[in-house]
Amino acid sequence: LDIWQRGISTSGLSSAILADRFRYVSGSNPADLSRSTDVPVVPNFQPTYSFRVGRVTSNSPGAGDLTSIKYTLEGYDLARIRNKTCTFTFWVKASKAGIYTFCLKNANEIATYISEYTINAVNTWEKKVIVITLSDAISTWNFTNGSGLSIHWIMQSGSSLRGGSVGSWSAAGASTFTTNNQVNAFDAANSFFQVAQLQMVEGNLPDIEFNTAASTFAEELQICQRYYEKSYNLDIAPGTAAFFEGSMVFQKSGTNQFLQTVYFKTIKRGTPSITQRSVSTGAVNTIDQNGVAVAGTPDEIGINSFLLRVSAAAVDQAIYRAQWTADAEL
Image (cartoon, rainbow, N blue to C red; front, top):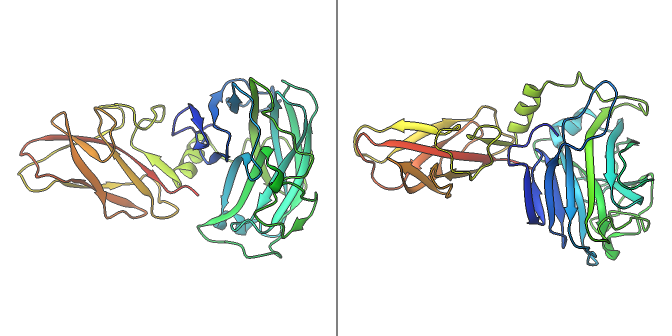
């Protein structure tokens, strides 16, 4: 949870990514999401941030509603641990004690593995360890650049998504995510759920500490940029009016239509969705021409680059500035 390219807080959304690669999903539970410095005290490697989901008012899920923090493992990465035993460790803190569900799904959500863990005390950081042997014996799996394995930390589930069994792979399908024991983490006002220092390692290693040698901050950032990259400085949220903080600056000679190739820092997982923004207002599908936002759209988008285009005729000797994001997230 060190990389937060999209921002560090948002309110009232039912689906959003703040911490890179971790998506908040919910059917009927818009929540306040934030990067928090409230973290567990961990020997040898102290986390910097946790991911906090909070609500001011209580919420009851509809029959088909699921609220979770979801991480999607790319198929290429899943192939390396195919049918192997893996250990998942994480720290969790919540305002509601009780039994929670940790759930794995394949891309079409037919193959399902459900595990339970218990939050014993409210407002207290607790470490949880879950050991699971992966299996591709049920349904079909993606081992290329698509969704390989989705991992859910579930906070609440509706009645039609419950009833799963614990401890084995099944063809439960998209209608089963939790057991009947899953609590509603948001059944009271001012409730919250937090996670920190999430880890998945190969092997049956219940006593493992957080693997500080896994990758550096720079390596983690490069991994995250395979799925999402922005021109903004790392600490500036996309959509912010930002003239110089990471923006591209070009000067045009002549009055032909303005075109500029933009190369990504990291090759993308797949063809990304490009959002081009004005540096003065943050408005989408615009580019600043001598300080004035004019229409512009990205073109010829690939996994290595895209073409920055001004829709109108260019102005000779004009200065152009733009910000952009490239989203290839699973």
